[in-house]
Image 1 (cartoon, helix red, strand yellow):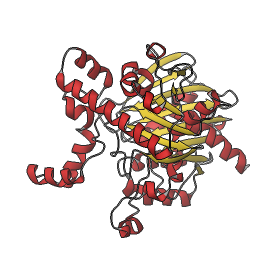
Image 2: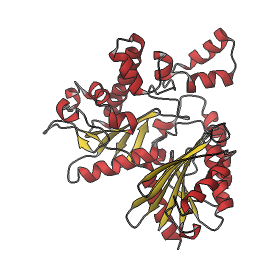
Image 3: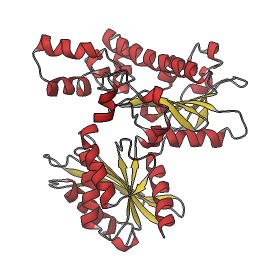
Image 4: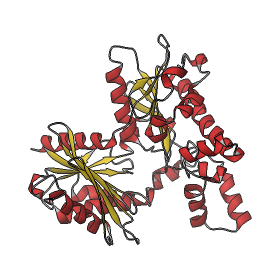
Length: 399
């Protein structure tokens, strides 16, 4: 079975074509700058990498362009669209309506449209991908995999906010959590790698430009750091993370700005970028820090401290912890970040091994000492594979 996985952003489309008999990746790439000047597609297939430039006015045009590359004689890997058996979509917000991946129907699309107000920056482009595929490949079934689904097992005392209950019943204001597909993948890999051990309490740390921590008991999410939106929780690349809500009204008053501007402030100009004034990119921050930039050093200390605090809080909430997993672009590749987060945690039972950790980039590895009661691990995430596997399972069940 051949499945194409689509991840639509506001001005981009990431894609991977899987042959699930392997599974193997036949092709992958990204459509960039949709609706902007300088649109292009980066495409990899058959061991070669190519860039295609051209005007791409919307998501449908970008996906149509991408599909044309997949069947081209020179750069493609399939002979016709008939070889595509299904499409899997990443959908950021499923609200309370979805606790697992689902076959996309008209009813599902209508429910996703109702969730737009919960994720106005993310769900519209996700839906654009679904609309485009429905138009271009009308007979190919589609599946939606939700970032929020994995966290639907949280108990009410974890997902509710201490605001008037009517705001929950009227507007569905609650903690949803995100990065669920990533947390689910690394959880599964951790259980496979540590098969036979007592690992019922796991903390997974997805650390990238967007970052979140999840507390998992017996395979189910019981708490997570992101909330109603992806702004809450950790310090991130450009998002502020946990913030006294009084700051928002105070800043609006002091700066005489409206809700749209303050929303941009906490989403796009805060976090590592806002504190450092240097960059939201961890590599650039670490380089600036090494050169003595004090604000870059402060941003890094804040980032690491917040993660350590969440790990401690979730260990307390679960009555202990058996495994701590690092994943995401930073979690997989920054050994200094992992060290600063996990060092001196013997009080939790985690004996970190600095030598094992050193130089680990993008590979599965245990980075705690032999005999440590708590295991620390690096596990590269693979959200696209999870979406492809969910899609395959749903399509086969439908036949």
